[in-house]
Amino acid sequence: MKIVLLGPPGAGKGTQANVLSNKFGVVRVSTGDILREAVKNDRDADLLIKTYMDKGELVPDEIVLSLVAERISRNDAKGGFILDGFPRNKNQAIELENRLKNLGVKLDMVLYFKTKGSTSIERLTGRRICPKCGLNYHIKNRLPKKDNICDVCGIGLIHRQDDKVETIKNRLKVYKNQTQPLLKYYKDLGLLREVPGDLDVDDLFKKLKTLFANENLI
Ligand code: AP5
Image (tube, rainbow, N blue to C red; front, side, top):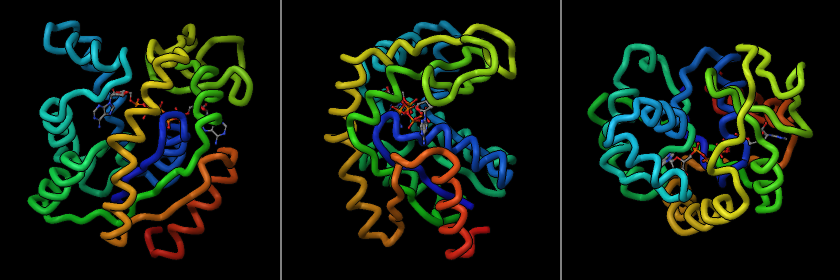
């Protein structure tokens, strides 16, 4: 299974990518997580990444492309991958296609999580994440077992710096201007499949499972 998850911030891409990765044993490659991990290194180059992320702007392509190229060429991605948050603009999509051609593989499908702007804002302002394992929760609809503590790591959850309302609004604008045009790009390639991002996590998973079965991906 080699798929891309496309959709606005807060559409539930990361949540569903984790579910799919656990159920089908396919690697999840999240550029957001890779970039956040790089920022933890605290080198000057990595701190530059943070300035883009904190504003909700896209990190420059050359940085993202080299990180993704390295990640998808690793052994654990040979059996398939779920790209979460990448590509994010046409240049990234073209570079991905070239890279996959060199590796002798093709994308199976691009899943578009169609989601209302109000859903994005409600989900992101209420999102809390574990700073260690990255697992995400929500203050209303995905509560940890103990208040504000990660079920897996047992440490305190945090509110992402870019999950403040003003930054979310900018991320939605960036999505509309730079990422949304990819819907037509992948539609023209016959790869786009639309799914309702507003569904709850389990119902959406069931829908995806049916879709994968119909297209012989599982
Ligand atoms: P990134 O981390 O990729 O953020 P994003 O795309 O904005 O997506 P999110 O993680 O905010 O949302 P999601 O759709 O994954 O939703 P989630 O499942 O977490 O990118 C962050 C930044 O990094 C970018 O702004 C940019 O600066 C940079 N970046 C990343 N990739 C880049 C690239 N390719 N090029 C350049 N720059 C890049 O869910 C959200 C909340 O809702 C959670 O609390 C969750 O519990 C809850 N929830 C999820 N699904 C459901 C559901 N079905 N029902 C109810 N609640 C749900």
